[in-house]
Length: 610
Image (cartoon, helix red, strand yellow):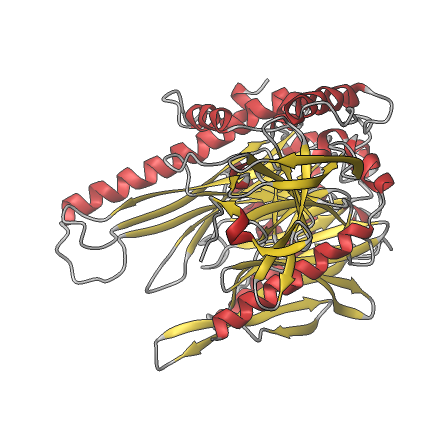
């Protein structure tokens, strides 16, 4: 009963939130329609996805570094299909128009998504998991590929490097397994390893990607190592540290003091004594680690983060940031990097790790730490998620969970000198987006939205032979898509445009939601329907025209407000509005000759999940 209650609650929350979208002005919709790359509106069909994943797994994958290889305003009568083509053309024009974000002014890059894959070995008898690999590849939307073709090439090479690393690890583990045999008494895998991608910055100056490779240990500490790529989107060039640093000696002196402090915390937490390493010794150690690719870096909106593999300074991996505002003399970073700090940005936070930020642009470093909290249950020998914890500038803020929440991920959103924490997690099987403001008064919960970040409604990801599932990364808080589930004439996934305000609120930008390509079911009529409202396809407004439909006619689900109507496409390519009402006796109904009739008696081929 608890699961049913939660689903009902989530559905009601989603309906209430999207009902508020009906109050959004057409001006907001139109102003975002020409948002160039950040709109991510061009459809990416399944065939292009197959081509992309084929390229990612091409036999030409090598261990080379990327540095070595990089170099809708149609008339109402216009058919819907033509409108989509016209929209694509107008958006391509928007890229070169005066209204498009100026390149070189650090415009944000949207259309980033993660393909989640696995490579497992269950033994010759398929008895249990011996090798468990989960890894990720980065991909771009069609819009972003067109705007940054060299970035696309660089990302494909990054994916090749991840795939090569995963394959080498897999076959090394497989050879070890064959050598020792499958008949051992251990319940855990011979190797359990994950490759996880974090996008630390995504704008026209740099795409910064961190890959964290974690090998689970069931007896000791997990082993963690990193790969990092800082790519110039226009050219595909991978930046070297020397490209952004003027005084390397001063850089490592500051980093030495920072890593000494981090190492001290690790040693105290692990109760393994203390280190007598001097600043000079630490400086030399870090320089050597960078040379050996044990220490990597990511160029971020407010500074540079450095990531050190585990088993270097301590059994744990370590990271530290140097913000541009900490370069007091302006001598460490090059001026083009130091002086080009974007006003608006989103960064995916590293899980359970201290991050250094300037939350309010006051030139002073702040610290933030966000994590999923767990509790061990002895009776079941299992950990349960109890909520989340945020530590901001040394103060803990706990947000306990009342339901079955899990899989927390965190991003930091920065706009107009204000910072907002975005928490994304699962509640049972529902996706939740939650916002928290971060300022001198602390961390406060401000808004919640049920749904998941998605691409444009015309995208289709069904090539499950090449990936398990796809997630989309929100990189522009001024415009992104959220998908939720509707249950009016079928169970459908619908897409609505949103933004995040600087005060930590979700703001709906569209007056209606577009049904995803995969949910555009075609229903057939069991009886005639007369005087059905015709809708202007461009504006979504009801016209004075009506349409009469015969039994056997088909309707394709296209748009909905989630609560009251579904706009459907007829065989004559007209958009008509089917209004749905709730009747105490009949349930969901529509009007037939002025009378309520159950939708089950009116429509055939409806699909409802669950």
